Image (cartoon, rainbow, N blue to C red; front, top):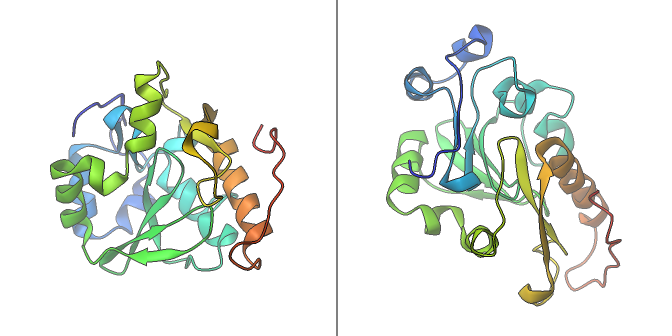
Length: 201
């Protein structure tokens, strides 16, 4: 993968590693997670630290995705996320996409290996990198342990030029997304919203 700005240390969380399917184990033995495409894709690793990179933390930690989102199952493996905090989960042998704003799940009809191949071949299309590319061209950047805050959220109708983009620590961004999801999950489509400018600070 291109634009790698972080690569995990060798596997240090053997217990989590042992529970993964063989294809994922083989990948993590070669590279225990990374942050590629200038922050566009974060593949988590089997490590105890840093917490933002830990697969175990996202899977079963205090902020586990299954505890935050109704449609995420405890058996789903949250192996990756995009620059905005949307999640890629392995459900059985299939990769599914979690929209972290709305909580909706989309089945991508590929396994882990095909997902990696697709991202490497067509990263912009596979990851929807347009917003990140615009942010980077404007002089912005993401550091390891940061995601891109997008305000208003992308599921809210607003002109792109009126959206505010800024880096935010991963834990804070994911907490904001989960809280936003809880607030809107029972609202009808088209419902007017009022979002505080400091809602994700």
